[in-house]
Amino acid sequence: MTPDELEAALRRIGAERYHNLHPFHKLLHGGKLNKGQVQAWALNRYCYQSAIPRKDAALISRTEDPELRRVWRQRLVDHDGERSGEGGIARWLALTDGLGLDRDYVVSMRGALPATKFAVEAYVRFVRERSLLEAVASSLTEMFSPMIISERVAGMLANYDFISRETLAYFNARLSQAPRDADFALAYVKREARTPEQQGAVLAALEFKCDVLWAQLDALYSAYVAPGHIPPGAFRPAGTE
Image 1 (cartoon, rainbow, N blue to C red):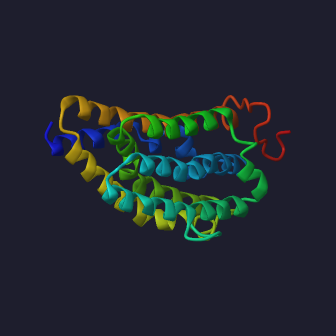
Image 2: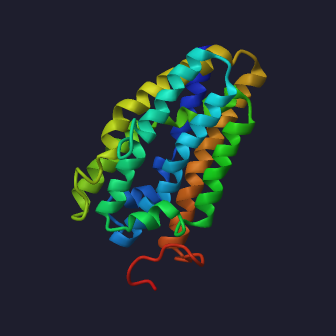
């Protein structure tokens, strides 16, 4: 494939497999969930958010290219902040605070679903163990995230009286950060994936990342929507004990 053909193939994967298509997200954005179900989503999503800096640090540790390290380390700052109380993870905890969840409980991840934990750690291992090209390519779901962020913010503000713009502040920064990161990663992949084998690996890496995100929503739907089988030890919304 030419670089542009490779980009088109990557974008087709997003159009077919990105998790904005999942039934759980349609319920979330459409105001069809109750507060306990939204709490479950935010609590489980914290597992993913908190793992992103570990994933990015693993990628940085593997490359000898100082330019790649310089650009990629901005992702660590975006999520961890320059100091305590700043960055994306802090803003996500402000979201869970706003939903009435105990912060220590969220951070402990004791209430997260087993499938969430497995999916998140599978992603960290993928970035740590597969080729650097595949590791970079796995981040390309960020090409599609501005669309889902816009849907999420508008839908949740319109449909949930327990949600405010302050609660959703995490997503404001991601509207500019995600496209910046995606543009860099896409240019890297289009430049470095030259052979059919490399291009196939890049496509498979993006499919894997889409599967990681989809699996987390599958688990949420099964536990908190239908059939409603909450695993032992997982978070139980008020009224379901």
